[in-house]
Image 1: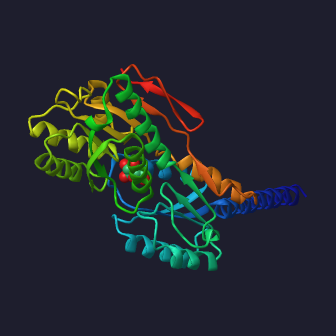
Image 2: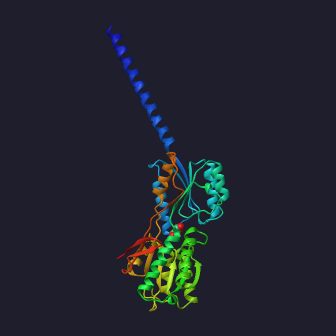
Image 3: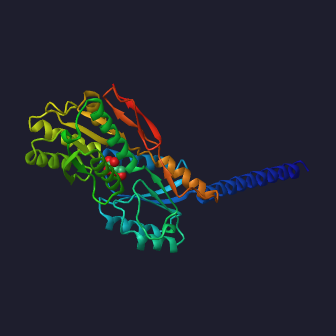
Length: 346
Ligand code: AHR
């Protein structure tokens, strides 16, 4: 009788343990498959790694679209070639990702591949530069900078500087080291300069692309200095070009600085992310930088989360940006009806 009771108790214990084990196994695998389901797969085609801005932008995307945040990110570096980016997009479509994020090198040439993504039912988020497509429904939304406004802020600042220092427009001799031709950042910043040259009557000596790199910025500036002996302003369409331009100015035995009626060459640029450029700003070698903010990762994450909730985000999402200067006498500028504070870097 005792033996039978013991055996029954043992069997009951074994049964309980076995059920407990099974139920824990079931709940673990349920958890796993729920996690799997929640992971959002994103294919991100970055255009390249030409500048500090771009590298910071890539890092921002990778840290926001991380596994901890519920994303499986497939990252492809286009190495500055649109053909590589098109191939990456086609690969993402084949892999049936949930979203495609595209940072395009230049504006044109995207219609076909974006139509393929749309036909596959994959929403596309454009980041940083824009795409110029006939049908705007080929992408869901865009987030980035107003590049022409950045240029308008810079040219307004330069105009204020000339007024405050009684410099006649015909004494302003500018060269423009442009960004990658056909990119939105180049188109907007160049357009702003060309309009200001027309409106204020400055002397624009030459414009040539430096491809947003330090190496090309130096080469282009060196060739400008060989051709023109009266350059007193260089408008660099990003900080890496500005660093290259300053190296060329110094190699030619000249000085980068704001005293433009007494032989110095004023350097102005865009971005504000490069540490050396910020140091040059403090030293007065760069006089003004229009900010271009690269931290789009959390913004893209928020857009995807909006879409995941079944809501519709705005199609165009602009980032607020400022101006940095080492000169203390211009503390704000007005473009159109908006006034922007200038952050004085000391
Ligand atoms: O499109 C943004 C621009 O691209 C940044 O100003 C430049 O530094 C980058 O390469």
